[in-house]
Image (cartoon, rainbow, N blue to C red; front, top):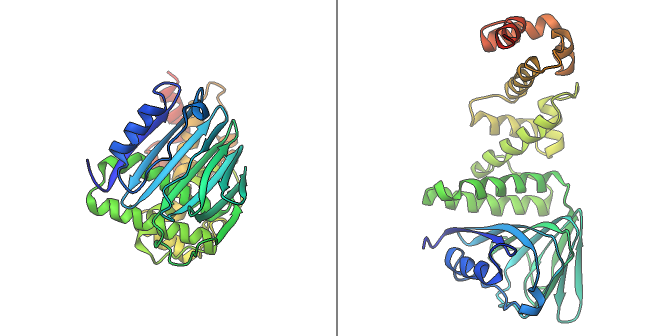
Length: 309
């Protein structure tokens, strides 16, 4: 087994809890021991997800169709855990109290004193485990909470998605760089800033900015400056991150609008060139035609005619 990476899928309905435990032990390995689940607590539980080990950290995405209760002591290694809950609720049980992480919130705390958890049916969440010394600022009992919709959280989760998708293809150096970026992005969540000078952040920042831009392509106010404000980074930082891709931010926005316009030209509803130009925020039909011809080598009308026959 690779000591610094590994992925395991969680599907209790299909494989059962024991199979998940076996897969976790084989792929995630020592240092991330699971609690001793009681069969009565997990009987009938329907949980699906994916866990990935990247260096000394673990990223787990999951969704529960049923309530899941675990009342069992965890190895008290004091690791840092960031819980991001999108739907449902995640209740952490400690010796003297409980901490609820509701939908739309994140919580970062140490695992010290954790005795179990109670996850509501319909919960969708991510849990990121980091070694206790990773951030160097959290003493036992200290915790931080905030909104899951924060821009810094979006950037962090964009990075975790990339890690899940590419982990098996990364070199050892790539695994270490991904781990380092993970730690810095968690730090950014806690401090409300992203240091764009950190090389490991360029990829995640570009991914998050691209995802946000794709959601705003029909917005007449979409500009690189708007993306930078939403992501809480300076415009210079955003431009530096995109420089690593060879495509400026404005060029990315223009290309994605042209790609969507090209798709619209193939629509059975046959929108006009002027309608498409207006919808995808080109200055006017002439500007759209010039950009389209420059990018695709033919006018929108020629493209539509060629592909409708």
